[in-house]
Length: 113
Length: 114
Image (cartoon, rainbow over all chains, first blue to last red; front, side, top):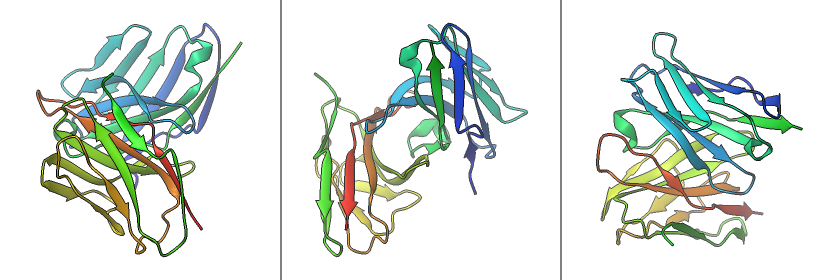
């Protein structure tokens, strides 16, 4: 049973526009959420995180929104740039992440010129 | 340069052979983790360790073994008991200071078993 779901395998966005990547989770014990960016044959790169006590966290072009009642989070990238083309993974954890992360299957973001 | 190194980048083995994947970090992180990624899938946790000489099984530990003799090193052995060993293996580490712990990943090792 998948506890973290990214239902869009791919997303195509025009350069300069907003990219919105979505993630749903089922485990109500999750209290810490992260987004990672990954290029093929490389390790994931940490982008941004959010604790369950917050509903928004912003870092430059990246903003993560958390809706606990809906068990949903989203990553907004604005403006989208060609270098943003990659696979984005949503991850979640209980207790801050010390015992490991549970990942979604990823969304392949393609930024078109 | 601080970071996580994994070697080798590509590894080929014959079925029935054990193989050990290396992971070293110089970030002075307490915790280290092993994940595997299969095509079209997310990362799945194999083993993790929060302190030297101690480690815990993750979601898919069967057919794998680990050791943590030094803080900097967390090698993973893929044994012949692992039914589908061909995958991309990722090592990560994190500090355990504070209340939340971002994990930082190495470049990965692609293991192919034929």
